[in-house]
Image (cartoon, rainbow, N blue to C red):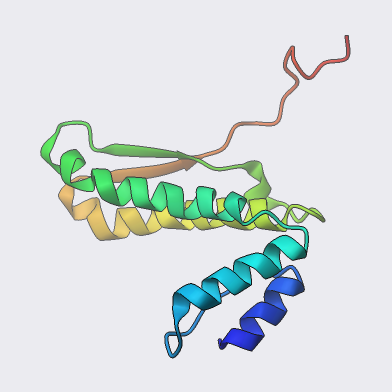
Length: 131
């Protein structure tokens, strides 16, 4: 999508925005991030959950292929299965992480790499129980 459309979507609190390459992407990215912040969202949540894990996985793939431990375990969330108002950025980013694990299996499975996505079960723990 183009610059103006991307900024409009960000202002409307869109979960994700895809930018075209016909313009200076760094300028557009900055404007979109500013629009996201102005709309009350924190872009770091999506960046950390998706790009952080993706970058780490890609960085460690060469070492994983050389070693005997060829398993990647990504921590997602039960939120990938729920639709809860106000959780769109978090839920969507965790769903993208789940899909990224699937792609890692498709792209590197023949080389022995296995990627799993797990989510902690919702349960009461001592820190969450009323005192």
